[in-house]
Amino acid sequence: MDNKALINTSLPDRKKIRKRKWTGRILDMVTSVLSARISYLSLILLSALFSAFYLQSFFYMITILLISLPVFSFILTKYTLNHITPQLSYSPPMAEKDGASTLLLTINNTSYLPVSCLEITLTTASSLYMGCDTVTHSLQLRPGKVNELKFPVFFKKYGIYTAVSEEFTIFDYLHLFSFTKSYKTEASLSVMPENEPVTARHDLIYEEGFDEFTDNERRGNVSGNVTDIREYRPGDRLSRIHWKLTEKMDSLIVKENEATSSNEFIVLLELYQPSKEDCDKYYSETGSTDKYDILDNAIKEARSVSTELLLAGEAFVFMFYDKNLQDFVSSLIRSEEELNEIFTQAFYAGSYTEEDQALTIYNRSGLNKGTLIHVK
Image 1 (cartoon, one colour):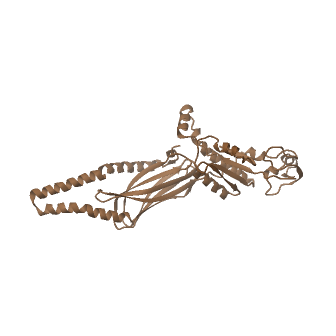
Image 2: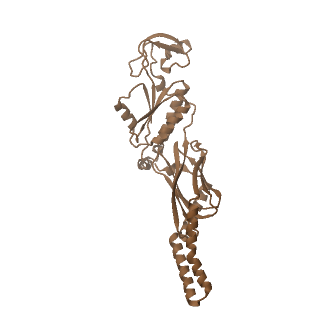
Image 3: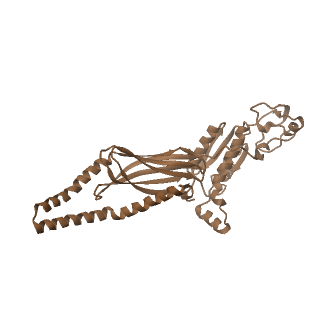
């Protein structure tokens, strides 16, 4: 999916940026290195002709000055290049979906000379989605100052968004030369799904082992034979609750088991997102934008079911398939902090375009243990 659909600026800011782009393009055409060199050589030639025709010392001095100026301009600009340091940052470094943040580009010019023109290219992308947004900006730098450029943005989907600049170019005062310096700087912002209150419980969480006094034969059950019952204590697994007796006795009743296997909940997040071409085709055929939001909705649902498990006091395994590692990444989740950490790892993993890829590999791998909650 095109990353431009994920990152937007507000309307007034878009107008300002568009105006700056057009101004930059006009200046680029008028003051390009080629046109500047042609103009400057023409000026030197004209001065030389005047000197030869009028034989005046004034024109000789003008010609010598015009010939020497590029040398001074070259040396001073080269000196300034080594005193420029760009830095990118997001403020704040976290945002909610459709929430606002600011991408701040600061360029510190520690020299005592101004910079007439600096060009820097910013690329913003998310690992979960294909494509990126690349924009080149031109600006002047004041001497001995920290120069700032702010880009108010808001984000339409969950994920980690990274803004990167790997080099910048400055031009001398006569615009005859350009110097490019490699200097990588980047900033990341995370858009995490909210811990929303669960409005409707996920029935799969409550299905395991909720039958009479003996558990059924389903793989992943908590136990074998039930030997005793007692009242619920904090920390007991949900799968040990005897729901029929709970309804009759009006209090939570837990089953004691003779032998207990290690049943656990496994939340498998499917990082599936159809390609932009598939989404566009589906939209043209049906008029529905559902395919554009498949992965975004899966992330929200995975957060919801994970929050429900944590609120119920259940430790569980969160898992996703990393196409780059060609392996599963999993973590035991017991707190919101651990949940945020595994979501961050998933955001960096990137998406894939094959439907149910993680589930297919999971079933083939022999990892079928516990209660699988497949989220897609």
